[in-house]
Amino acid sequence: MTEFQSITTTILLGFVTFIIMLISVKFLWRRSKMPPGPFPLPVLGNFLQLYSDGLLPGLLKVSKKYGSVCTVYFGSRPTIVVTGYKALKEVFSDSGDAFLNRGCLPVFDRLFKFEGLSFTNGDTWRQLRQFSLHTLKDFGMGKKSLEDPILEEAHHIAEHFRNLNGEPFEPSTTLICASSNILANILLGTRFDYNDKNWMEILQKSREAFHILSSVWGQLYEFFPTIMRILPGPHRNIFTNLEPLENELMKSIRLHQETMDPACPRDYIDCFLIRMKQEEDNEKTPFTIRNLKSSIYDMFLGGTESTAVTVNFGYLILIKHPELQDQLYEEIDQVIGQAREPKAEDRSKMPYMNALVHEIQRYSDIFPMGFPRATNRDITFHGYYIPKGTNVLPMLTTALQDPTYFETPEEFNIKRFLDENGKFQKNNAFLPFAAGKRACIAESMVRMQLFLFFTIILQKFTLKSMVDPKDLDISPTESGIENIPPAHKIIFIPRTIEGGA
Image (cartoon, rainbow, N blue to C red; front, side, top):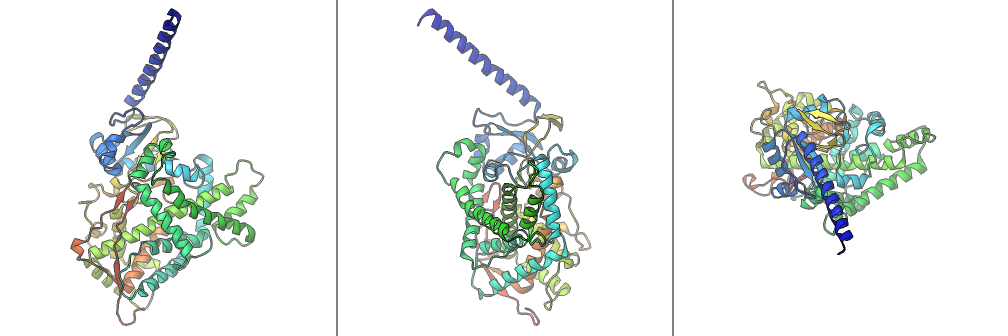
């Protein structure tokens, strides 16, 4: 090596070393101002600390050590983990709009391409949400008019269970179809039969996608999306399994385009298409086919899965604790009887059923990690500096399991939602729908649906386990982005009460 080459090599090495040191100093300086947390490794971040326990237990373990506001690294991506009702309330409601943006969620970012109701930000999100709230209300969301399609679907479920003639049955796929039909009624103006093999297969594949997403493969994708995109493995089935649903929704949109009457909109899609026509000269309009497809895709995935899984968990809880059914039968027979069907207005007269539904939601804890937010400006939070664009993970499970608000939270106990007089009482830490401006858009519909689905089935059936309830394990089979209930067969025995349906 010549003297010139030696000097050049030395200068290059010195320059590279200087750059590395500069980046390291900048990283350490910024990290020192952010909330505390385990020190991340290059590329891996805090993967090793979290992966050894599983993502959800790992995050809870880290927050227990570092506090209600701490920092973990998903690969090279810093994420602020927020735990406990008080800190979550600050994120959702008390900090203005600082945490209003949608955070990074690699699987969903790939699926939705930052389009649609839940995965856009700023003015696009505001316009889409305002339009969706207004339109869904027009089609019954939060109103008594939505009661009829929910009751109709509950009757279809009851008829399906009655036709089993007491044969043990695993209800998860039927429940997903029933839940999807409530949304299909509002969004697509249609209903799918439980014997529709194509639709049932689409829903089954969607369900399998959520199972993979909540497994270790889905968690690996969240840490290392760039690498996992090119690696083979079960995580690829997340996208292939959801593709048929996306295609079916696009097929419905095209059919609506061909048959729509602007003077008589039938459903959400028609209203969106009408708005598109009105804004066709606006180059910046968010009302596009891509945002329409992503919006209904998002509502189908989130609304169908969460409600069906909650009902499924509820059935498992009822066969695990059969004594609950006797108390519910007594309230149903006193308030409603067997001669008429339940109504949404009955909820205010049925504190025990209302408490049961709330406790099922709390205990099943469907989306324990919530959905990530992101800061839309630099902010000081709990005395720490959080830069603009930082992911914030609101751990909903830590509100639903907060011992300050729910005594012995690991136990199922509906009395926590009843006062000393047996009347229903609210609990501020009950946050299965999140809260604030990004809260679940379909909360009122889900509440009505859960109440009517549970009430009408328990009005007509006794639910029994195939094994001794003491031996029945209803713990989630996967706990990631979603808590997945185990598959257990249930026996639905018609209640033989004079005058009953």
